Length: 243
Length: 396
Image (cartoon, rainbow over all chains, first blue to last red; front, side):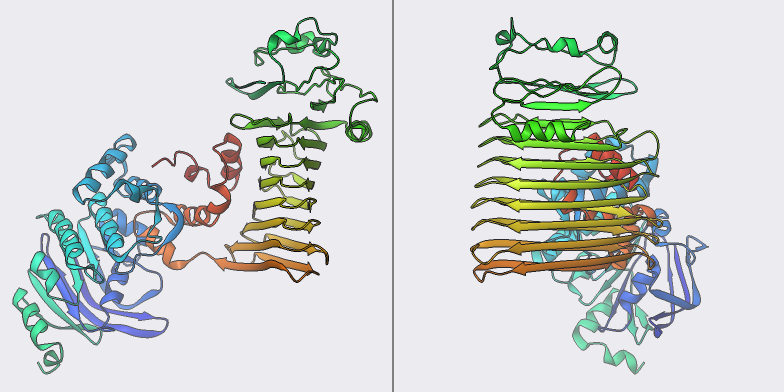
């Protein structure tokens, strides 16, 4: 599904990723954990094609094809999805207007225009999102929990093959996190892969990873199974440096 | 009062007929002035005009006119002219005003100025149902309008200049008077042909307790000049203004809004939005003036500009002349570019760069566009701006 080879990335002239290697197969859930500033968010933005993040070396293949020359919208149309840690507010654009544009852009004829409203309603009901969301401006004045629930709604509506979830659990209380985690878990299937970036073990209690990777100084320093997350929770990250 | 508003849409032309009668139909029987004489047989035969009525008037009857696609006719009454729109064309002749009305100023003004344009006067203390929509033919090069909103009337007034068929320079001169306690939502739309230019002059006189919400939107053309002068004449007069321009290529747009507070406790708010692409240039000059003996006023003025390219330029010159200390006034100008993070967010959801940019522009203009009731002309203007697909069908 996703193959990252020796990926080096600079932001405003500063090298942040220093040779990331990662292989993800279809249906797998990979968790990336690491300290603040270790490059986790840079990886997620680079994978989705933010123009500010410049790839200086390496390759990223999605379903066997290089995506580095593709713009963010082209990657979205391949069914890659980035769940933002801090979704940006766009006052003046309603959630309804935005969702309709996004669904028709990504899913095209798969969801006829007449069915878009029905689809949105159905998913909102499942995520327990009130109708009032639709007339509000996108992420404008939303609480942390509301933003993340809207991200989860978008993820479900756009039916991605690869979900890159950047600290989806940050800023959420336990109840909100459970709802978001359920949303992710329900989207999980044999055909989808999830790259879960998180600081904490608690989200992984709900969304069980197949592999856990530790990010240190711009690259993956250590990898393991779900048990690795438990040790990181207990001992922190520094012990990985000594390996 | 009977107010009938009909919109007639045929395959190629969209017409608006507004029939606005101050008295019940039966009162028009046996009236002495036969308005029908002003309507030619050719007009009567046109299939695209239906329900065309030609009321006759008797001295002493109040009257407001019906409007049609190609030109307007008008009539007078003993008590005064309540609505008159004049366009000299082959089928309708303007009515010559006579002296002796209750307010000679209007009559003299009409005589002196008008060859094309609109005269409208709302009935006193009347509230219009819905919007009163007036559509002027854009083929006229010089349009002079005079609009009076009578005491304690409440009116939603949508005033549109249609897109001309050929490129030309259009000049409009519009005087609007709000009598005491009139409440008016006035929307001005000007749809220009792409090679055309427009020069608009507006003068608004707002009397005691009257309130004007004014919204203006013009399509680009090659140049757009607007000068808006506002005189707040009475206590508690209120002026709330919002307008927008989008410029591209090498267009130049000049916008000037001058608000004169001539009475205590009067309020004004001015917001002007520019969206500039390519090498377009906009010059905005704003003025708030409050004299020494005028106190307890509140006046705010803001210019917001979104620059889409490095070559686009805005000169925003806000100016305050405040001679009284007991006032609350502010002015400001902001210039921004498209937010990269907003663009990335939208594009990460599959929207193309062009779509995302249009949506961000649309969001920037929302405080302006949100004031318009849905109108096909707003859609057409936004289409010229490349934003139409995001205006229509925005229901939740």
